[in-house]
Length: 85
Length: 268
Image (tube, rainbow over all chains, first blue to last red; front, side):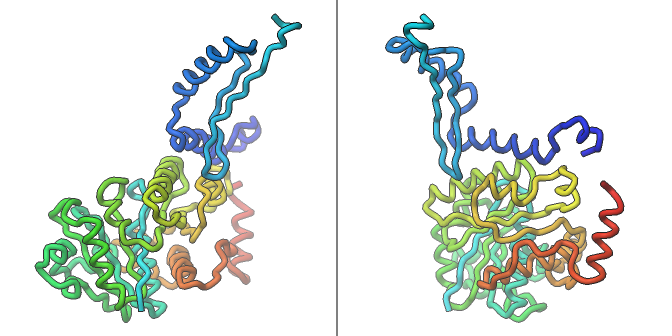
């Protein structure tokens, strides 16, 4: 990569390749496409909001990996019944 | 004596499976081991050409499977080293001519007479891949430091584990240290972090490999070739010797110091 790219703080092709691979492999290994994750997220929101107030726009559903083990992680912030709604 | 069966595989084609099989096989034979290199890429045979033995083929693995010759008759002896043999693939047949159980049977027959049986697998993850894997005690996974090859290697690791076979050991082929240093290529450490399997060796990009393949002389026979040295190191690791994985790239002594000096002066 050129010194100009470096000066601009662009990631190197090496870093870009590594990051792309990490994302590709998380989806390959779990057989969960980014589109399917969105569907899962919407359904989780629909089900949970019937029972507890949640902050829908802050819900994150991601696949993480630790060595060769994949994990579906849902981060669901609960809305405060008294102050927010 | 009971041979260890080592299958060389990759997922993606063109990453250097055949070159690895030929050179690691040759290096083991140079170290005094009795070795068979087996080409399991039925219909697209290449191991004979890389070893420079293409003119001596009479029988191939399909003849053996169909009982048209004995296994010993199909083995071609390499005259450059004491005990290296090639069992060639058939060129005019398709993958279905050799079944996984045929492969297991041929290996069982050869095991008592040899130290190592190396199997060059077909690219891809279909029938040919499964056939080549069936008799394997050890699997060598060859990849290049680039996105598509590493992605396919990851898929192979998953499939191998699903088949109940031992986790493959990794060979990173065609690494360009200069490009890694400039931040233009994935380094071995990146590939290892992503694939999370044991590293068996790193082979630097080396034009001598093409020269050697053109001549039909495996590069491992070239004393000074960097790739040849890397193949010899892999063979020694397979034999259980503790050979460091990351030797100083530029070598020791005055020459190495000069190389480092020249490199730090230009190109950055």
